Image (cartoon, rainbow over all chains, first blue to last red; front, side):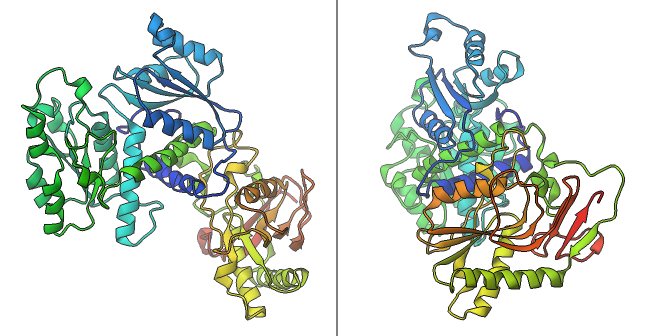
Length: 341
Length: 195
């Protein structure tokens, strides 16, 4: 793995490896010294062409906990607002010696462009590109689900996948890169995904995705789910009328107090409610649902730092081979690894 | 991971299962003797093979001193993130760090590893330890000391001093971590390569 661009091409072995590493990174947050020296002397650039608070802060915290130097670059107030191209920006960063670029861009495919060209010789991490992918968000969601799933099964989450877990992803799928990344990753991990949305908020070609489609929130809940992921209604990307009114959206597609009660009456006491944030309280999720013990919103934020630490560590600690060729997995315990002692 | 030398040389067993067991029994008593009892003792194994060795040592210490609860004094200390060769080696996935419930502040921490070679793992372990707390004393116990130190580090308790050439490989195989190739016995220390 050199770059982390999408979850569509992420192999099961690599996904599990990132999640397992994140599990160890999570332990650092509980320690007295919340810092590891693993990426000392490496430079991570946060290249954000689009507004973001939690993703940027999360990446910044992750890089700093690994002792990397962090340079924050926001398009606003930089030369980009004077018309500098992505290529020139990238080459400038390259000349400054960036080891990793965390990029968020309004154009789908911008991170791929950065990774495929020779503009910059750094690891590229996609932190959200247009309406395409947001792989670290999907990984942190999967991490949160895996911990929950393993706790229910009474086993450790190390090495586990999500086989048999029923996940409903509900809301504005059309504009959601989170939904796309989650569908691919959850399929790889063995979960059953159902997308729940009004037909106007589903993209063209969604029937070819490896998931089920539902237009009815209540039916989906009645069929039983282990996790409900509510997506944010992306008002800033709504350039047409996708639903009649926010009130109607909230009633038919939102996770309101009635649906929260329905989970109890349907006997799904272990179903969790997820949201990638930022939440529109009262629109796609009610305050009661967001603050209920089922809500994993804050756990997701916490896990975000661990997952991003894992991604940065695995990309920057110097291996370009697939996991099958790495010592830890290939050795599988038959030989000593003491040569490097 | 260096590749195995061109001409296949039969592996020579230097410690059998019984030898390992005797060495660990002696180290367990040495640890108790050096510490004048089991007071404040914490054993931290370094993954992968240091941890099962730490568990075995704790069992032996508990057998010698009935006031000791073996499970309560053992922990695992991962040093991956503290290594000085992270940017030269392939990516190493980290192992869990598990400390005994009592923590390590003001304790007598005995680091345990299978083979002491360059000493760089132990340097990393000392750095990792300091980020977790402040032990009163840190000691080092290893099953094999094969020489070739690159840092001013020495072990307090050694199972066997094994003079080697750096072209040789010392392989520790433990029942807890290793499945023997071809059904040969585990729980042994072998030396491979030209002698």
